[in-house]
Image (cartoon, rainbow, N blue to C red; front, side, top):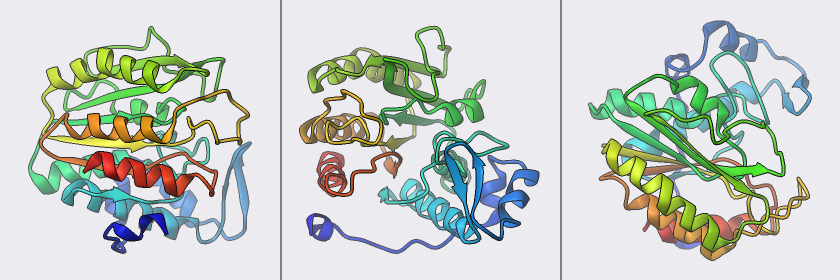
Length: 258
């Protein structure tokens, strides 16, 4: 298998207290009470084992942040805000990892770089106005795509959104990354870079029937650029739902992260 050449470890689950750094107690208790498969909204389902899965995903994300690694997790997390689920996401793994890393590593500044095809709206909402966490997202904005946020006007000192077009190529993604993401993260001078690594901008991703064209080489280069942005780097899996292409794309990103 493609991923066998990389060292793989099973992560310990997070504690409830880790989740409560980013989510309300009311919402966490709601997840804990689910006993049968339940549609929480139009596109997010949870079952009696989902809370356990959330603890494992958050735990793996924390270990990736603290120790340097790539958390291969499900469910994804970057759409989940403080008090609810959204877009397949139940808890915000990368946000939880950022808060845990600040405490466990004794650091202040964390940059979260998101290259999923969708805007990381939940992550942005959790950290909006927090001077210690920079959220930078490069994502498809036109044609309109869920969640419909992250446009050119959503910017501030620690919020950077780079809206792209559905048909943009590797060269266009990388040029925008170099022009907007790299300078913003460099100015912020993070002690840790966390990557919300989504692979649903790949041409083979058919779940949304989009005309995206990012390739294996493109994801390798995005990861390589992210790894150069700070002294520490960790990554968390977000989107990517084609089981035939996802292992190849994750392997390419791991090569890029080095």
